[in-house]
Image (cartoon, rainbow, N blue to C red; front, side):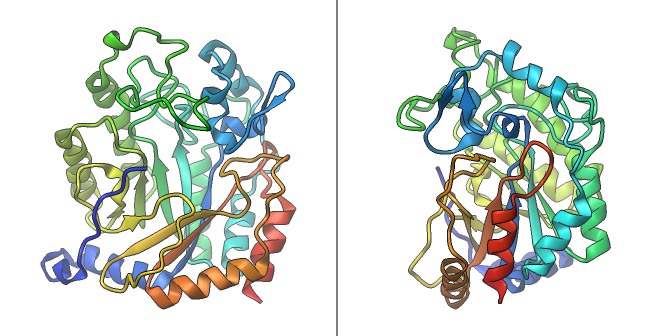
Length: 338
């Protein structure tokens, strides 16, 4: 995925005090937990008797599931065992200092209470609880910082969602970046309309509804113009001056560099803020057939390697449809601390 260039920490002297303090915290934090969770957890990478290769959160695109069918998952999404305190306590017990949660992934479904779109966990499901709100409260309670992932570019639920300017070559060429199965006429797509009516307003919501965020984790950044990405950057700076912005925003301005997926650097990163985002098995979203678990020894080795390079390690777990972090994930995380 496209990444912005790294930025030198010497610029900190010109930053506001809140941003400078947050950059210092990020450098010292070193280790965080990412959580990919949404409607895709109900399918676990399977559809009509077939299992997709690769990453399960892309299941809608891989199988080209119409929105009329995929959105029905919301009517049965009722993760009665979700417990924000348990998630945060696990991260804390594993030695992690922050959590990054998918407030909205590429399927367009918001895991927070959005007034912009009813396609969200409170209004569209029997669960009717604000997952982001509960995680924010649990993080404050247990002393961890919260960051929110938001897919500002791709949105398969929307006719104008992005990705249509990029080659359709994901998941071995089977998945499309954009929804070209429901919305087949590329000429009718108007990303500016989606950006102004959903993407930008929802980013404003997550910046104003859940207290101070440690960071906002944008993704992809192919379709937005430089002006649109700059507008997001400026909005974050205005609403939360101390909130860090990752390099996948797409405009070339950022506070820290996000690696490519599962990329482990070999060069020194101590002159910048850098984070490797990686999976604990092979998929980001829950996929019960994925048994490619990293060992505790491997995770410890990566942590030590990245620490020596001055880079953070953001390690992902994929909770299941009932809201549970898989036992194997928890066991590996806890064993990796020992």
